[in-house]
Image (cartoon, rainbow, N blue to C red):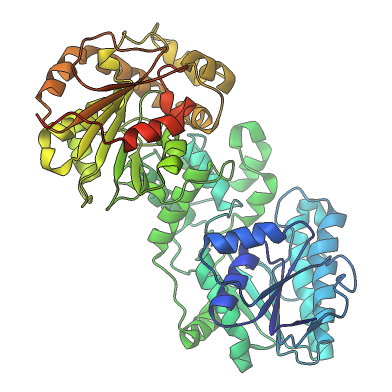
Length: 567
């Protein structure tokens, strides 16, 4: 028998799991009501966010059933939070109604039977309106079902004197949200947003996930919020063109040049617009009254973060996850146009990638090292914007916040900035490790060719690129392919490859001047062709990318104490 003061339906969802976390952090005992099969997902998320789950009970439920399939084992519930919903476009009308409408009613009726009930908090949407009437499901079952549920719940609660409060959040931004604005940002990043739907005053408001969770958890503690609805959005959100301009500046990409009326966008082929027809219903110049929400937020001590910071952080998350296609690497984002991953202040290793991969190529090595590392996409490559300065100046900028004296590791092309920094700042480098230093090996021919080579590689399937590189398919190659398909990246990659070829003798001469300890790691199938007196670790059965094929052995070599004496 579970005795709990709060229950959250949809507890493994984007908002639901944050509600559970906030409730637990504020001392509540919580029952998380989940669909079967979601238990591990919620526990993993809570553990990953450092949430003490001592006060948590997990149970399965089916909100499509009148009794929610809960039985009679839950007692003492005071506050009921309904975050369960199907939130996506293209829903079948019957499916949408079963969860978003019928399920919401069943949760309300279950809550009304709880003898200790203090409040029901239901999540609706910011575009719902009172007395909306019958909805046209032909224009989109998601929005129609949410609007119909909003009106139905209010009516039932008023008739039966159920203490209901409705939270109406706008586009909620936070880790794991891939809906609505995320698609616009993703298209912007991929160079597929030549125009914005709407007009100069189109308003797509946003709100921070933590703000929403804290506001909702606090609602039952404010007695006069029962029977009311609250629009949760940041009224300082800029109009959509200015919002996208802000994001474009952060990502260092070109913003759309003009806007198109939504009526026209609907008539254009979706393959051209990349816009979901249902999403266009949210493109509006309407503004929303947040005065009542602002009063409650002040009473609860809840405030919005700066909207610019929220948007920039969210854009980083969209890029890191490729809009939900992959699990994002923690602590990753842009700094002055450079894509940076990991520990920026106290790293033990700084990892610089080669061509055509990016900082994701170090993920397995970083896991093996299991210490703080800093990795970055080199200027103009991967996700980083091109730099007008020299490679040495870029490296100085990357290392500016670093307080430690790390090991600098450069793979292939990445040896160039590593050597430059070691020459400029020997007192800030404990050791230099060069993995497959291309300037000491046979000149690369894997990706060279005619001026059209960049366009060929840009369209190359992942399997073919992996075969060309002599490495297995995997996340590093998938990331490289995604980056190469963005405007300008393939061309800049080939320009960097040509520049590396032209600096072979220069880099060899500079390496001879380095005074910090230096080690070299190569694959047996891609040996050095230039003589050196430096210690060389040879990894068997691999070629130019040993850190991708044998990350454990590379990590072991990086941890090795065997280095040359300072010269």
